[in-house]
Length: 238
Image (cartoon, rainbow, N blue to C red; front, side, top):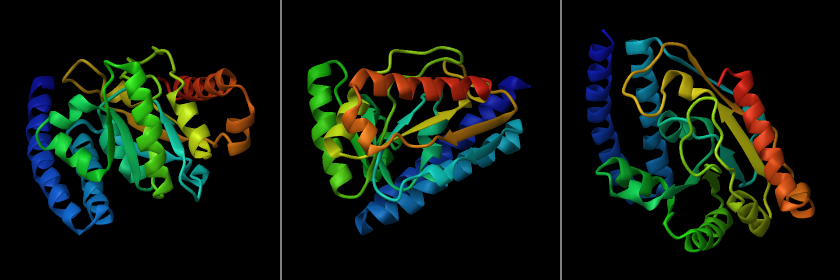
């Protein structure tokens, strides 16, 4: 049964991704806003498939914590799920993602059309420069930026080193940081095609103010972000 579910999900999900990604690229001709509205279909259809095939429900909490102005979102990265669902939860933003993703047909093209700062992770110094320069440009244009501070997906219960790029960008752009936690890895784990029924909860946490970003020590702010996100993930079962 689990193999049938997996093949059914990925078969339909691939077809939908190709169709929606194509529409996103076409919509980008009419502006980033148009592409973004189409892009929401990605998360909506994906979550519909998760419910119909696996009984997985999705719940988004804490939207009242979203600032009115552009900011930096520091998001836990456990799964593929958050990449396509974040546009449903947050105002238009730009991802900070590894450049290799841009080479994936349709998927990468859609990410680029929606707004992505593609970085070269093999060169940390160059990557940090790209994050600062291109990330600040996005924020000045009114778009928030999403960073996965661990840099890669982590399994449930695991934590990678939180990297300071999120702090440096927020400090340079003079904006708050909003931590975001979830438990997607419980239902859509990394490293396997199989999924588990349950409820995926994404929780947007209260922001770290501009004053704290600017005045507190970098490591103290980074530890605050990690503590908030990891504690919430444990609360959510992940």
